[in-house]
Length: 192
Image (cartoon, rainbow, N blue to C red; front, top):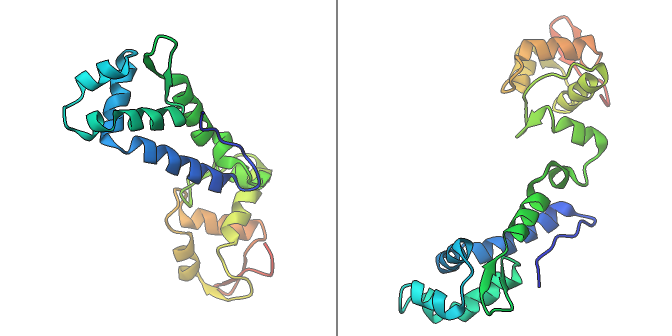
């Protein structure tokens, strides 16, 4: 039985659950030792038992560890009674969990496009295309409460921490009509 991911209504939850299951299997030193031995070469259970420290959990619970690795799809018992490491399953899991498609599954088109310019909540660079620039500026404007007056310093503080300097961002927000400036006071009207 292999562990597989099926994307449904909430891929983030499924990915988290998949990662938890995989971590439970891999975050055991004895299972990792067994998996490491299998990665070097296919082995029978008695060969594995001879290569792990005696009286260790790896030796006393070898059958259980092999069963867990098989259930996770990381090991397979061949016709010759040798266990083999399933590197293809590991690569499949890695692709399913960490590719851009898995990370952006369930996001709107705008949110998917934002991932190219925003990393960990920080704007890394400005897009060259006007439509994408406007999308990024709208994302920034959402951080400013509508109909509340802000001083220039407050706007600067809200825009600090991005790779693009806050003065440029402030000027772009005003130039694109997402932020109004009058007598040194900035406001965002309704929805940006």
